[in-house]
Image 1 (cartoon, rainbow, N blue to C red):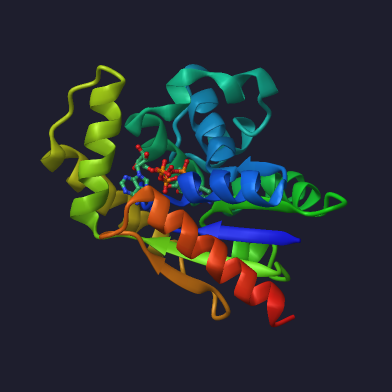
Image 2: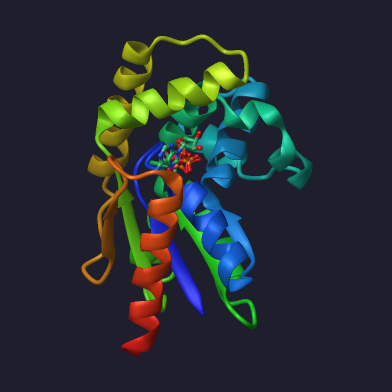
Length: 208
Ligand SMILES: Nc1ncnc2c1ncn2[C@@H]1O[C@H](COP(=O)(O)OP(=O)(O)O)[C@@H](O)[C@H]1O
Ligand SMILES: Nc1ccn([C@@H]2O[C@H](COP(=O)(O)OP(=O)(O)O)[C@@H](O)[C@H]2O)c(=O)n1
């Protein structure tokens, strides 16, 4: 079984994808981490994330980078959003993601284009969303928990900018796949959101 989970920043897709992976005992790939690693690699090498050649060169990174805590910062998310708009960067990362999706027994991936580009044949697709204000508040709480104080307004502006960039790019924009189930988590607890996600996936599997 292949499950695709897409959605904007801090919508709760990672939380849901991890819970689904545990529930269905599937391996999980957070594809955003790959783009974050490319961005951090470019910046650390003194390159310009907006430059297509610098961004492509950043795709050659050591996998150890994927466990760098710096990848979790909002800055890394913003840089990831810049490098991820280059078609050559997306192309360079496609095979790795498709190989993961093709694992025997299935897999679950989360990102922006899993249901539309990486695994359009997925058995179940969720498009997770939440209002920008709720997402900024969640990110704020998350960062406060890590000892980082950034105002909700600053995070809201960053989230809106990232939404705009991710949704308006030409290649693999953030968009709900026609056959994806929408899950708005704005008013849901994590537990309820996960229960709804499981119910949606079960319903898709039963209908196959
Ligand atoms: N339904 C929810 N209610 C409250 N907080 C949530 C909910 N879903 C996720 N969160 C919290 O919001 C933050 C962002 O969630 P995450 O799953 O990392 O989002 P994404 O992967 O879409 O960026 C995390 O701190 C997570 O614990
Ligand atoms: N499949 C994906 C995953 C992430 N991305 C890009 O990488 C950035 C960071 O993704 P992420 O999933 O780690 O970000 P959050 O939603 O966790 O904040 C996004 O803003 C996208 O620009 C992408 O283009 N395609």
